[in-house]
Length: 407
Ligand code: DI6
Ligand code: FE
Image (cartoon, rainbow, N blue to C red; front, side, top):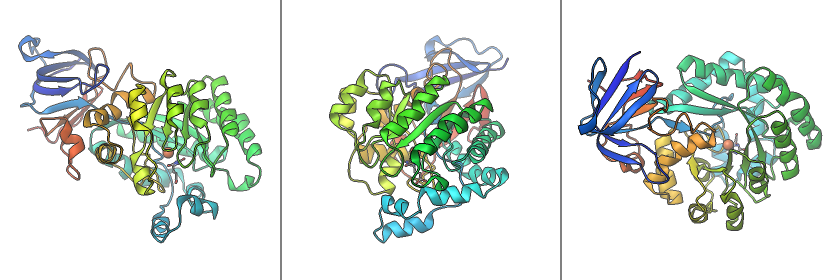
């Protein structure tokens, strides 16, 4: 089994309860696909047969994790972007049959190959900036065959690109057009047919729902999550994005891995989240693109010790964003997260939001060796600059995925 010894590194481990988990003048040994040792330069193990990488004080971090995306879809929504600039709101566009519904049409009429080819450059853009794990949701098919088609494309992206890929079933993302006026019947179809079928095909790692005035009620969302629980699947939920329907509290009471968006979450609800173990996934790309002004209750989340993750929410409508570094900057600038919170948000807390924190998300002995070397010496640089990609090399599970920046 091959070994790699990183020396003279500054390491933001994301270990510990808060902060960067910073180690300076440090070394790290990878053995096979795992981290075997991490510590001070003076105490490093002998190199032996290991390949030695001199980091020259540059920064190592865990591989970045994008824990909430909608990267597989047909078409685009540039026209809707123009309509919003002329004054139409996201909810108005949805109400007149645009928005998610227009992407559903384009996704249904695309073949698996077309969806794969369209998603490839989006996924690659994320990967180029050090992303080693991506979650992709279904939710633009809204019938069994088309939801399964989306999840197959997601699986194929992971296999083809050598990524860790989590597939989330989001059949309750919007009401399928055939079910107009019959949302409860659609939810029954999701629970009784779509979800069990997708699970039987091995395509579901978690189940998500969109609880919102333009999507499903809290009770309808709860039916889907209850069914997912019966099937033994982890839960996630899009909640409190445009209004407060009480979805976050319901989902956390059911033990959801994460509750996502949260702009309209009350500070009082945060207290109920605090001991639930659910992660608050913040999506500043959607906040920015929709020119939202209602901020998620960041201070309350911080005070109550709710783990905060960040994700791109990459989707054709509310967040056509394919850069986690930009998301980190937005989280600091728009939400006032610290750069350390931003880095934890795309590493250890994103791992938690996927239920993968025992394997990835921090650089600690025994974890998988998903490691990024950056052309910076201080971790705040990752959140601070916009439009420069300082990624030098990426190791995924102990193998180099890209090392073009290493001489
Ligand atoms: N909230 C979002 O931000 C995305 N889905 C959701 O439930 C938007 C999806 C879209 O506009 O296509
Ligand atoms: Fe989303």
